[in-house]
Amino acid sequence: MSRGAMADGVPRFRRRGCWRLVLCGCLALLAVGCATTGSGAGHRVDPLEPMNRRFYAFNSAADRLVMTPVAHMYTAVTPRPLRASLTHFFRNAAYPDVIVNDFLQGRLRQGMSDIGRFLMNSTVGVFGLFDVASHVGLKAHTEDAGLTLAHWGVGRGPYLVLPFVGPDTLRNTPSLIMGVVTNVLFYVGNSALTVPLTVFDVINSRANASSSLRYVRENAVDQYIFTRDAYLQHRDYLLHGGHLPLKAVEQMMLPPQATPSSHAPDPAPLAARRLPQKRRPSVRSPWLTKGVVVRPPAPGG
Amino acid sequence: MEWYKRSGRLAAWAWTVSLCLVAAVAEATNVSPAVAVIARFQNTLLVAMKKGPQIGFQGRYRVLAPAVRESHNLAYIAQITVGPYWPRLSSAQHAAFIKVFTRLTVATYAAQFKSYSGEHFKETAAHAVGRGDVLVETKLVAHGHREATLDYLLAPSGADWKIVNIVANGVSDLALKRAQYTAIIQRKGFPALLGLLRSKVAQLSRARKAA
Image (cartoon, rainbow over all chains, first blue to last red; front, side, top):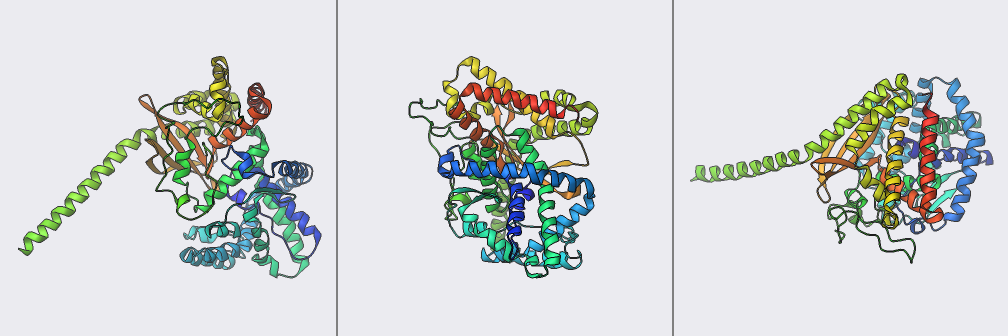
């Protein structure tokens, strides 16, 4: 599952018109394949699971019936270099969202680098069709309003599956609006241009997510849980700037979660070396120092 | 006198640098066997990818099975994935679960690493974490300079090091499996999970035979 596929799973709304909502929803379906939490204690992060499962089933069916055939057809008729250029173009058009959130998080150096990246790709890269900035060391970052709120200490809130949108959290919902108003295409104002571009954006993003979605279908024994946990873990990972939180690594191998049944016996130690009796707090962990209310990763995640 | 002070400072610096060097060497000594395990395993993955289209799914399975068994602590990973239910299972169920989990792990690798188009692995860092484990951070660099982060957590197993968790782009494989498996056991019971995993292996095998 690629980081890019997940990051791009957020739909871009356009001004006026229900069709935009539908298209954006379809785009969000691609994110269905990429969500997760690291928590066996699903009820804690997912109190709305019954409703979320219904929306997940709806999104999956809509994707299977509409977007999958469209994406296959699109992939068959467009050469790979063209798809790559379109992907660069749409990412570049949406990149001001990253820049704004860089500064909102106080990442001044990263913000300046991202301004340079955006300007270079918009000019030398021909409206973003070519990612020349990466070749000169201006690498792409992933930031959005949800990550900014997390940076400010806002708790994640419940996990959500939104119809036509896919996996999300309450904290992340402002990203849906902010992603729209910071998108360059939002200000074009010519529907003869924005309509086909929006359609291409949706279809191209869905096509890019095909391998991730196929991976989920082939490997998950419970696609809903797989998607939810992958999404939430990946968001935590992005929150740490694409670095694995060491505390999460250490907690992966801690004793099993609480027994799900009150009649169940306490889990026996699996191995003395691996399952210490006392959980050590990690002083190295950024999880504990940012004031962010984050669910501790589940054992194993 | 000034010369004496300067010499003292120099000696202190030299002592500090020596200590750092010794620590670095110790660190390198500590993690290098774990790094070697990952390097061997990833080399085998590349071999399977390069031969992938010719030898098909079953061929890749045969190439990868010994490498996976050698580099992964599958019995331990299997144990963790069912969490609190493990102690409640019988020895026969333990054996059955480890067997099907091993087949599923190899089948997943054989299904995913099926062809080669210039990909390569690069190690980015390795350091000790937790209670004597080692985290080896690598990247899979694909065509077009796209990168996926693959972090391996290894733990000592006898005289060797073995993988106990893989984290891809921040997503822990062990956590995903654990969340799914425990939920299925809770809802449907252990035999249902065993059946699901067997059918997954069969699906992967069927879907990729032509590949």
